[in-house]
Image 1 (cartoon, rainbow, N blue to C red):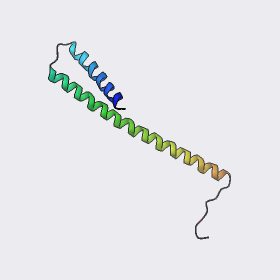
Image 2: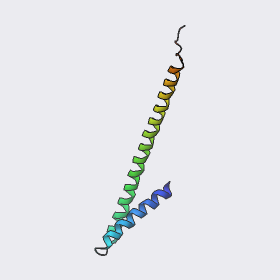
Image 3: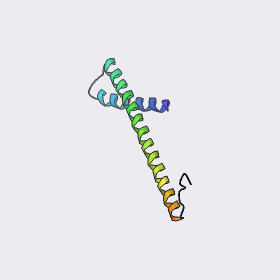
Length: 84
């Protein structure tokens, strides 16, 4: 996962640098700022994608539990009550 993040950050940084180099040569400070911003962007993207995966997993589990409940109701399955 770290390798993928580093590769994505490098790719983003190279694209931005390429576009900026069309207008002229960039300083070392500007290049470092671009690389730092690319790393931050990759981290944010990672957080967002992990949150989306969690939401999808929760939705999938909810859907499965609803299907089980419907199946149980259709078979006449009744939940046991405590104290009897």
